[in-house]
Each structure stands twice: as C-alpha cells, then as structure tokens.
Image (cartoon, rainbow over all chains, first blue to last red):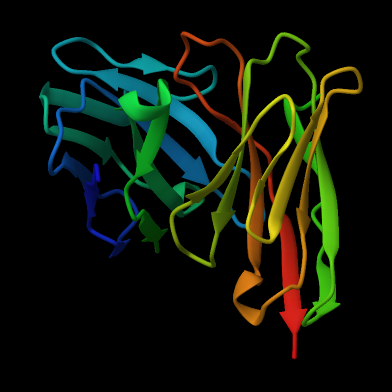
Length: 119
Length: 111
C-alpha cells in the first residue's frame, strides 16, 4: 500500500533554532501533502496544503513565514519550523491522499508523525 | 462552533462489553465520513468509512444520521486491544481532499 515516511520521529531543539521535517512518499507520487499539528488532547488541525511545484496554501492563523513548506518533487514535502519557540512544541504529521480505484474513492495515508519539543 | 465535535470520554469498559459513541458535524453539506483510530503518540489509522446505509466491519458498526448530523461507532465484544482514541473525520466536499478531525473519543478496555 501507499506509504509516507516521515522523519524525524522526535526532535528536541533549542528556542530560536529551525527544525525541518520531511515526508517522503515511498511507492506513489504525492502531488498533494497535508500538514497537520496536534496539541495534547486536541484534534489534528490542518496547517497547510502543499502541492508539488506550487506555493503551499496555509490555513487561517498559520504563519507562512514561520512554517515554511516546500514540495519540490512528487515524492518529498518538507515543513520547516523557523525560529522555534516552546509554544511550537507539538505533534506534526503529514498526510497524502491516495486513490483507491477498487472502491472508487480516495484514501489518506499518514506519516508516522514528528514530536517536536522546543526547550 | 467546531466543524466536528466528539465526547472526549474516556469510556472505561470491561472486556467483552459493548461501547458506543457519537460524533456531530456542523455542515449539512458534508459528503464523506470516517472513523480513524489513534494510539498514543502515533499517527491516525483508518478504521472504517461510514456509508449512508450504515456498515459493519467485524465487531465495529458505523451509522450515519444525516437528519441529525451525527455518525456513530459501536464496538461489540470489546478487546483490550481496542483501547485507543477514536477520531471522527469528515470531508466537506467530494472534490476536496481536506479532512476535518474531531478531537477524539478515548476508549479504555480493562481486563
């Protein structure tokens, strides 16, 4: 099945530094990648949608200059948290839609998530 | 009002019990509905889609009530391995890939 590999799974960084999170589609081409953030006991909140070869679309309230998204190829999308602060500590997860022709619908495959702790 | 709302629980049930919970959605134009399962500190995994006529997958039964704008999940004969957070997920439009997640309902099955 379609797999998205997400790295790193866990990162601890100092306040003010930048952290890059990668999501790679291993056996399919991901023209679209969704980036979510999940705080403890809360729902996954969509941050942005990246499309290969074009600018990402950010959800309301998400700073595009702070959360840089690059989707330069059909198999790689990256999220860079710039000048990270403790309030950015969260679980970040990517997801790509994948077609399921047998059921004539779309499915969604998720990366395994990145737990970011900013100290 | 949130797009998708769930009772956070937790629902603590003994092995073998039946547990059921609902999820409400705010937009009547919502097209597709899913239940995902999320284990602690892990990514969500699709449990089942929810069809208009209701559907069953083993011990799991999902129902959709469009008139009242809610979906439900029922787990029969609970197993210890069913302990998880169950996320209600809604897609607004059929040509829109965006998922709207509920905050999840936590189920704990005890021996």
